[in-house]
Length: 354
Image 1: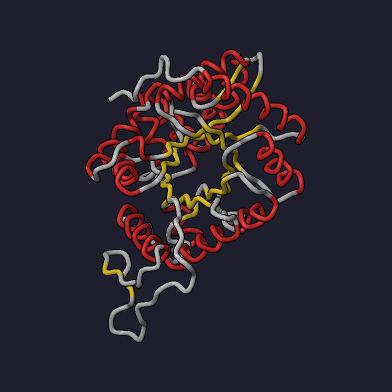
Image 2: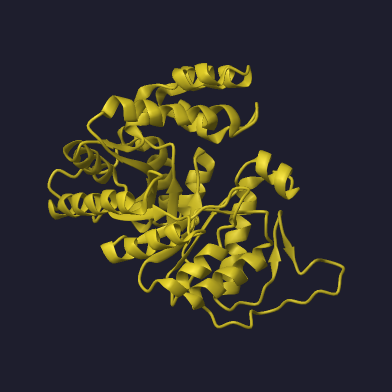
């Protein structure tokens, strides 16, 4: 198994564009455009399609419910044509705060919405006549003047990856998706994520090896490991305190299933009570250390081996903000470290623990 590298994209400035262009030159496999409540994920990739030739262009992620499934399929087919087949459609349900507060779409039955969106996108992309009788979508609308239509564009393959954290969504990923978009991931507890994906895959007659298992990491090459670990840990206070409601925080739940339940609950409490500094201090340093690539080159190499042994196939790397030259220097080091780990072959590799 080869461990691949992707980078998170911010091609909204000349520096951000140059980073992607240079990452392609260094051999980085993929670039991932985010979508929250600022820029969208699709437009930047169309721009990058014109400025690159090899690197895969992935959404990380398109928010389901922000577009109709048919529009999402049209956009995906357009990008696949513009990029000569390099586009990857990464999707996710986001959360009720964004969907209901920003898009005005009720956050209901997210798993069913994901399943049906994938079914509709694939029907359109393969050139089928669009007829769908589901619980989230019915096409054409009954009782109206709509017609069942085929896409006017030629059929095309659209790889679909799902961002998933909860067991149900992970199982759905194993059943339907070409890849998994993961975060809040510690390779030491990979089974928390990979076991549900495996069960979903096997129920559909597939295996875990049929999916590209991608995980988000930050990169910090430094001798001051403790400072870096603490700095990265502090950033999770916002994740646990603000990226969710009292009822739904998928990130907090994911860390709870990895053994940090009391810690993240206390971080959330402190944040919601308004003591954000105390919340930041309360995040376990191990969370910052184990969800990122931190330390010396030797330490990062050991972490890369651990991700590879766990079964991760792609690392989506977030580079520290700063000058382009410094970012490229760090990225070039990482590319070489990954190549050295891949050159070690399968010796010592273990399957994901069950």
